[in-house]
Image 1 (spheres, rainbow, N blue to C red):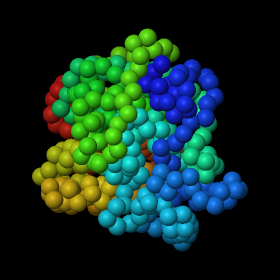
Image 2: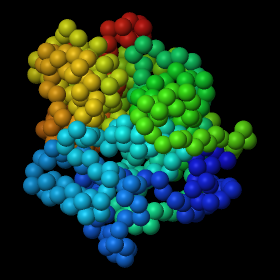
Image 3: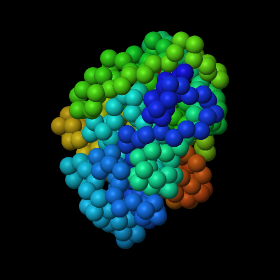
Length: 424
C-alpha cells in the first residue's frame, strides 16, 4: 500500500485497502471555518445527536471574513461562537492570542500529528499532509456528519509518486516547486489521487516549504498531498506539542498510477499567469507585466520563513509608486515573531500595509479586493476568474520573494540574485 492507503486502512480497522474501495474511517480531527461551519452547524441537529462525538477533536477557526468585515460576517462568527460554547469545543480560535488562518494555525497549535486522519470543510485542509497525516477537504454536510459520528466515508485514492532530488537554488522555495509540478500535470492531473512526495530532495525542503506544497496539492486536483516523516517532521511536532506520531511508510512494492521526478536544482522562480495555477512561466520569461497590487500572506505563504524571504527581497527599498502591497502574517504568533525580528518594520518602511491574520483578499473577502482591470501578484493559491474581486481583474501567483521584488519594481520581477542565476 501507499502511505495514504496505510493511514486509511489503520483508521478503518482493516489490514489493507485498495484504490477505488469505499470505506468508513475514524477521524482524529474535524475542522471548519466561518464560511463552512455555519452550514454544518445548521445541519448538525438533523443527525439526532445532542453533542459532538469528541469535544477535543473539533477545531473551529473563524479566519475568512475576520476581523469581521460586515454584519453578515459577524453573524456567521456569532453562530460558530455560540455552538462552540454550547458544545464545549476546546479548539475554538478567534481574534486574540490564538487567532490565525486555520491551515497554519492547526499545525502551530500541535493539533495534528503524523498518521492522523483529518477532514476539514475547506479544500486546503490538505496542508497537514506535510506532517505525514492524511488530511483532506470535505463539504459542510460531511463536516456535520463527522462532528456527529466521528467517522466518515472515503473512496480510497490511487497515488502519484513525486520523487524530489537535488538542491534548491537560493530563491527557489516550496511555492516554486508546487507551481512547477502543477504546470507539468495540469489542474486535473492528480484528480482524486494522492500526491505522495519522496526522494532525497525532501530533506532539503523546510517544513514551511512542505506545508506550501501540500497546501496546493488540491490545485492539481489531488485528494491529498503527503510527505514522509523524517527528522524535520519529528522536530516540528515536538516543538509544537503534538501528540506522539504514528509513522506510516509506503511499501516498496506500492502501486502508483505514475512516477514523476523533479530536480529541485533545475526549478527557477515561477509565476502562474491568469486564470489557472497551471499556467506557469519562469519569472525570467514573464516580460513586462505591470501590477497594481501585491499580496504576501495566506495559508499558502504567510509563515515566518515566507515573511523573512519577502523582507530580504524588500529591505532598504520602497514599494513602487501606484502599487499597493499588503502583508498578512498567517497567525498571531507569526505576527509577533515577525515584529520581534524587525520584519514588520521593514515592510512598513518600504510602504506596505500589515494586516492582522486573515484569509482576506485570497478569496475576495476583504483587505485588498481588486477593481475592474486591476492586476495583482500574490502568494495565495488560486488565480481563478474573479477570485480576488472583479471578474475582469487578474491574479498572478508567485513566491514571497518574487512578490516582494515585484512590489518594489512595479511589475513582475525576480529578486536580483535570481535574475542573475537565470542569466536575465
